[in-house]
Amino acid sequence: MSRSNSPRHRGLKQERAVRTYGQILQAAADLFAKTGFANVTLVDIAEHAGVTKGAVYFHFMNKEALAVAVMDEYYVRLAAVAKDVRQSSLSPLDAAAELITRTTAVLRRDTVFQSAVRLQKELFLFDNQLPTPFVSFIEAVGELLAEGKLRGQLPEDADPRALARVLVAAFYGAQHISWVLTGRADVVERVREVIDAIIPRRSPEPPGEPAQTLRSEQPPWTSTAPSHSSPEAHPDWGSPPRVG
Image (cartoon, rainbow, N blue to C red; front, side, top):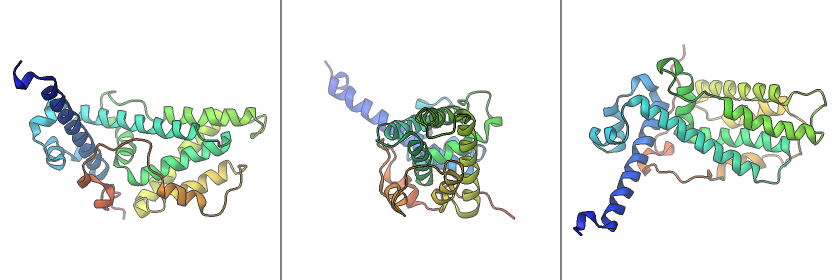
């Protein structure tokens, strides 16, 4: 058996391929979040990822395929956040609030989430290639609210799915306003205001404790991004369009 065909060599090649895929995916997320899908080229993504354009084409047919992959990764990460919250000992209403606030905290620092939010607004640029937005998030919140209703945490005439739609719509509106006005610096606080206004009957929490927990909390996945693509290293990434 030649050295190039040995199991060890094949394993190393596969590891490099997985690492390169992750670098390209993260680079695309960074740039889509910063400037939008239409303003990014595959050359931009290759340069940001530190790979050749050929390497990008090896993994992705075109820029649209990259956008689909970014959205798929977003839903994987969102599901991981939801699973993490589900495994907590919170009551259903507290869990619904925690799911939204934890998603908000991740959105503030994770360009995969930021690019997904932006891509969802750019669906008109795609030919039905992207997953239908918002549905899975509404369902996750709605399931928790339905459990809360069964436990008597919501009035008998409450409609958990309608309430979930209102909550998720308000979440996206609040994060967008925060993005435009402060670059999402105050997004957790603004979304907490939404939650407190819509589902105020929850377990009392010590003042300031949730925000501190969210700031220190690590997301329930391992990032494949190279260190140079960290949002903290580039605080201007994901900056909103100029207003006025």
